[in-house]
Amino acid sequence: MNRFAQLLWDRFLLSLPLALMGTLALLSYWMVRTAPEPVRAVQTAASEQGPDYRMQDFAVARFDAQGRLVALVQGKEARHFAQSAWTEMDDIALRMVDGEGRVSTASATLGRSNGDASEIQLLGQAQWLRSAAPRIEFTGEFLQIGSKPERISSHLPVQLGYGGHTFSAGSLDYANATQVLQLDGGVRARLQGKPLQ
Image (cartoon, helix red, strand yellow):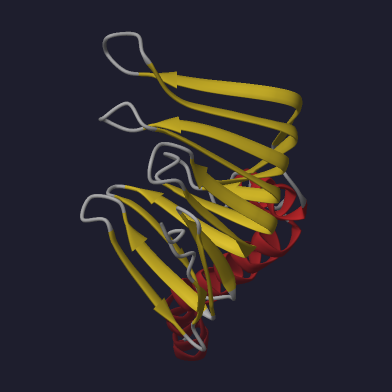
């Protein structure tokens, strides 16, 4: 083999790994471009389009260890969204019993609950009522109920009925454990006096 042929053969052998790597890179690029979309991406896209399940005319009850009713949720339709783990409920009605046996009820046009139901949002004609003395009632277009600890709040205008008194405010924050109520934003009150003897 002459010197020129030997030189060409050496150059070919030196460039062979580079040529193979380039071919493999092009082949990999082609495979990625033509491969089907991953299953989890398809599932995510499907879940973002709407709820993963629905319930019609539903009722869900929760009981404590002694078998006593703690909470009852009813509604016309419920939609669960897997990507946010929240559930939306139309025409929601709630019945809750606290540790002291006091019953509270709530209702709204639309309700939203997180995964463990520790937070419930009531939207549209929202109402929360505790009929045990003293009677307390909150109404407005938005109420947020937290159960750990039990707290009711709203950043929108609300009306409050307490005993025979009525209050209106731009926002509220009520902690049941301490019985402390904070009203902000143009608070107005109508107090019912005792009749004179």
